[in-house]
Length: 450
Ligand code: TYD
Ligand code: MG
Image (tube, rainbow, N blue to C red; front, side, top):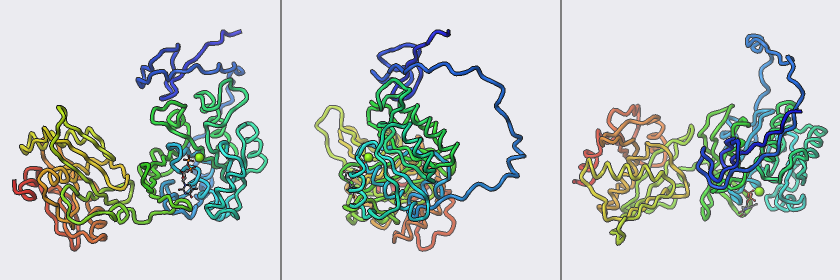
């Protein structure tokens, strides 16, 4: 009989190790390596695997159409609706609203004629029903289940054959042939594997809910990302009512697409015009505020970037960033100092994207620089101006993609001037005054007269 080998896995990044160690070499996490239950030796491999020429596949029927949920923001993030037999992972911090979103989504799919099951491992059926009542969905034709034994769940799914099954959450599920606690890497991975295999074999779309923690302490969705077709993250800042559903991987549609929701007293409601919402609290002509015309996925979104610059009494001045990459801020500060001769030494810098939005595009550089300069010089940027453009280390402004879309969105929201890199392909921008700038020095000269 073959010797059983022990195997170890990092619960944060999923890397395999041959022995236990205090620190994972792959991700640098401490105390994240756990032993996995040994896999039982399977039967000898046979030559049964069959291949089909790709040309034969083309003659098969067209794939079944996507199902629409009727929630536009969700459909777009999915790439145009739910693909039958797909496996979708929805990750997010505990309490962010995953269960609420999925209950609303299943009710919506059910109303559109899909047979839907919602299996909760975290709440009793009565609690799920109470939530449904609060959301005004008590009459929705959704099958509810409260169960954590995956074997039982799969048996039920096999008998009922729904079009869509939601498993909330994967951390509460357990398989009887895996000898570790629910939530451990081996359980989470084995359970997800069973669900994904079931989805493909039986043609049931499966949504797996997974909690992430900042430390990645429990086996998080990261371990599962490569197993599923689509990975969506539900994010938002505590204290803000906005929630953003972001596709980070999608085999059936564009990644980086976002859907914007607002958490209200009776559930999540769609935000159809995020730009108007993110700009709604803006005070006119305040120093330190700049409006960035960004692109999220396929859609332009305008956000306000706010900066505060104040004398520091610390040896190393503070650099506090919310919603942007702090490395990017350091680079922009360094470029302003080295190329434009504007130092920020001895000054605390606070940078914030309004509304709890996260901005990852390099195109935000110019708006960030503008907000910083405006705060430092105490000169407001014209309230009807949007900005975008990438700043290179030489201080030059680089054109960015989708200039025309950015300008159109800005015009639609009543902005009448835009500062952008020279040589941008701006196309027809009706009613917009364009200020094209070759580099940051030209921008500083024109805006702040330095
Ligand atoms: P929930 O969906 O349970 O989060 P998750 O499944 O991601 O852990 O959401 C919980 C939070 O949402 C909770 O703080 C209460 C709030 N909430 C509302 O504000 N309005 C609502 O209608 C509902 C159902 C929840
Ligand atoms: Mg939940």
